Length: 238
Image (tube, rainbow, N blue to C red; front, side, top):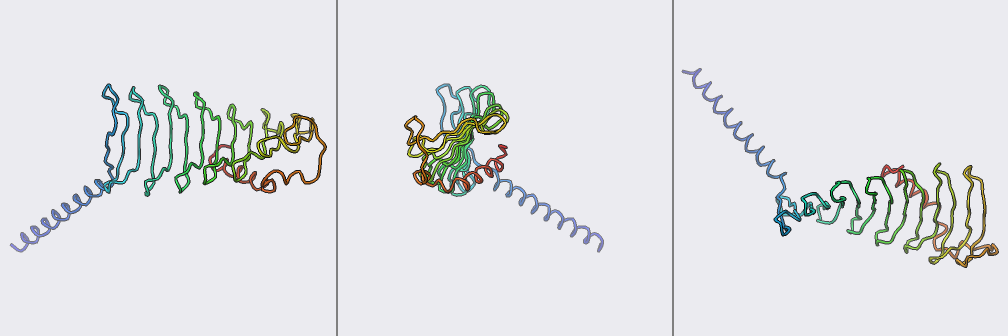
């Protein structure tokens, strides 16, 4: 009899623990599973937009669809329901057309544009006030241009590259016009030509000391060049 009670007690204990474990697992799964709401539909009845919510009713993702049912774009949102990432797709092919990330203030931080074949075309990086900071052009997977902007979003320098990855030319800008040295390079990196442009007048001008001061934040260019190279490595673009 004593043995019977012992076995009965152990069996009941195991059953209770098993029930508790199953309940805990179920609750955890429900906690992690988002709620999906179809917010818009096309005239043909296919879904146009889906919104994903946490069990606490926080929006975490928005998926838009083309009329044929393929994904058009996806937004992900952070804990504050602010934009985290954005991905846009080409219709029919499903190839990524655009990818963006955002600053903590919900302003765009970076943007990558791809060609229809999926090859990278442009990389943009922005200040927290949405002014452009860097722009990099690509062709056949190689960098063909780098453009630098000051804190107000005005272009201050542009560098072009040849197919070998060497500098092909560089120009400086002030107030939206060429201003400063305009240099062209041979394929081996030697200088091919060099002229001084004065406020974009299109003619060779006399060099003068202090021309850099007319280019707002010119002295920050070395720092900006290092920052851009670091970003390109961070985003695995070089």
